[in-house]
Amino acid sequence: MSTKKDKIQNSDNFFMSLALDLARSKHGLTGTNPSVGCVIVKNNKIISIGSTGYNGRPHAERNAINFATEDVQDSTMYVTLEPCVHYGKTPPCTNLIIKKKIKKVVFGIDDIDKKVRSKSLKILKKKKIIVKKNNLNNQINEFYNPYKFNRLNKLPYVTGKIAISKNNIFYSPNVKKITNKQTEKFTHYLRYKNDGIIVTSKTLNNDNPKLNCRLKGLGKFSPIRIILDRNINTDKKSYIFKTSNSKNTILFFNKDQNKNLSVFKKKGIRLYKTKIDKNNLLDLNWILKKLYSLGLRNILVETGNELSKSFIKDKLFNNFYLLQSPDYIPLSIGSKLFKNYAYLKKIYKNKIKVNNGYNKDQIELYRRN
Image 1 (tube, rainbow, N blue to C red):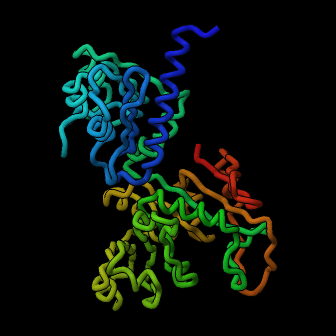
Image 2: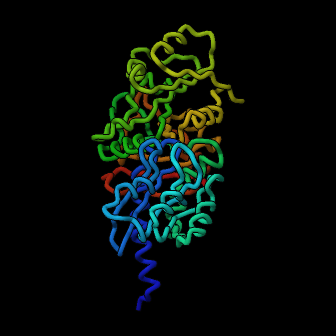
Image 3: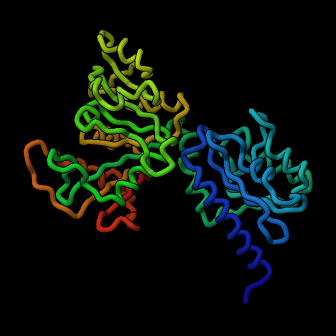
């Protein structure tokens, strides 16, 4: 027989799970700020919801309060992350919560930001507001792993992706698409959820990709195109070069004396001279630190053999998606085998199968421990 305490806990879990869904919906779209979800409840009825605005403003709590269908006084606020207490571009959310006389705040996790951590709880309690923590059995903590990684390491959270055939071929001149249409949509979903997308000039010149999100209505959220091109050999006939005046493009290079420098600058491409690592390659650690300083927090890497090997070896991937078709592709001239499968499984031992709605394609997620 359930007790009153059980019913309250179940109710808290329900409303907090809605707040988490709201936060998830904006993940990757809130700039340098974390994505937060907020639900306001009064008399056991939802009177408002809110999430962090695009590029990080307004905050979820402010949105929820502003869009409430009735007075929020004496209501309960469910918010995935501890409300902010510091003055930035807007006043603290705690000020608004106090001003609007919200009775109770249920939050998911403490903010890792030192400007906020645990301070808001003390302020709210001092004003006789009930404060309670509900992490949804660690679901919220897990959701904020990328944000915590960003804050602690001053690096973007990096996701790798490669599509291969049953016999591990990731490129064939005779095959346009290796995986099916449903899996292709998943690829575009990853692009939608990341601030930037990294490719090498070799991949760009071979495949002439668009590197955009082609899910209906989401094209405006396409990631910044990031090219690794040591000698500035990117094809000037490529889609990326031709559209660089209107679309945000970054290029990392090393060779100074290059006739293409001025041409690429005129096209509006942001050029950054990059350090060389011990293997005489562009220094990926330096590049990731630079991208973080430019405000990019979530990066997708669409890889081939060389780039994936470098990222795997240096443990720079936080996540790696292996998309595998059930079809065999005949090995022919120009075909390329993914040679880092065993290496990937050895270093990234935390494997999860993602198999919902992708027909016969297999999607495996490898996570760094």
